[in-house]
Image 1: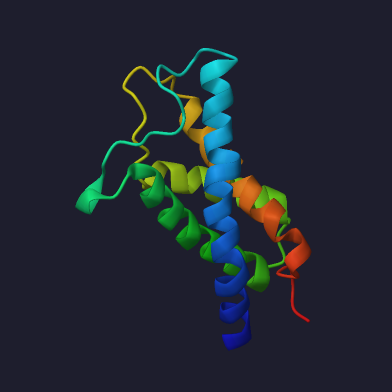
Image 2 (image 1 turned 180 degrees about the vertical axis):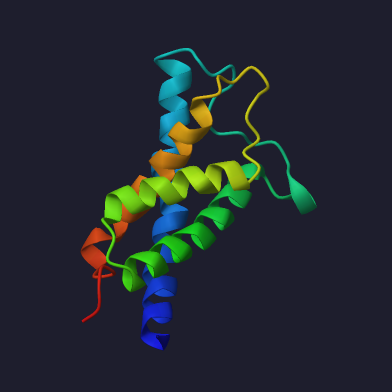
Length: 132
C-alpha cells in the first residue's frame, strides 16, 4: 500500500498539475477563440486567495486531483481514461472554477473531463495502472 501511495504521489501529482495547463486551459482557450462560447480567455491571471493568481491555485488542486486519480488507478482495476474523465467531472463540480457568469452550463463538465482525461493520459506511460 505504501508503494502505491508513493507512486501516485510521485507520478500522479505532477501529471495532474501539468494537465491543468495542457488540457483544462487549452480546452477553455479553444472554447473562447474558436467557438466563442466563453466570454473571457482561458488564462485568468486575477489574484485569488492569499495573493496567488487563480491559475496557480488550479495547478495546486490539479496536483492533488492527479494524486487521487493515480491512487484510484493504482488500486482499482478500472479503465484509466474513463476513470480520469469521470473523476475530473466530479472534481469540476467540487472545486471553485472561477468561470464567468455567462458561461454555458455544459462547459464545466467538459473542462473537468478534459483535465481528468488528460491526467490519466499523461499517467499512462508511468506504470501506475495495476500492481507490479
